[in-house]
Amino acid sequence: MIKLNRLDGTEIYLNSDMIEIIEEVPDTHITLSNGNRYLVREPAQLIIEKIVLYRAGILRRGDSNSRKKYLKRSLAKSYLPSFSPE
Image (cartoon, rainbow, N blue to C red; front, side, top):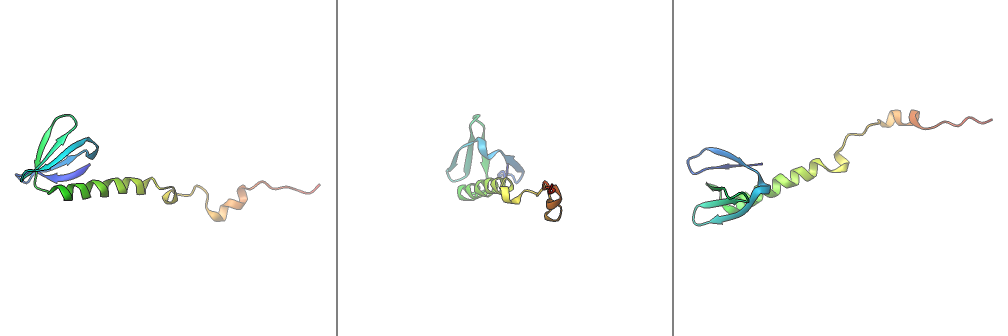
């Protein structure tokens, strides 16, 4: 969801996946895929930047390097199989 401001100053949150068209004529009109239209204060370029930042944040959270490790390095050796000589 991205935060935008209507012309009267109230804040709205739009699902960026539902945005179909963004028009500047001179106010910014956003048309969603369900047919709803919204007039907002932000220019189209700023809305596009907000969408890109929102999606980049989602990808960053899903990055495999940022996941927590289940085993600490100090404990990892205790989970390895041990072989005793016979």
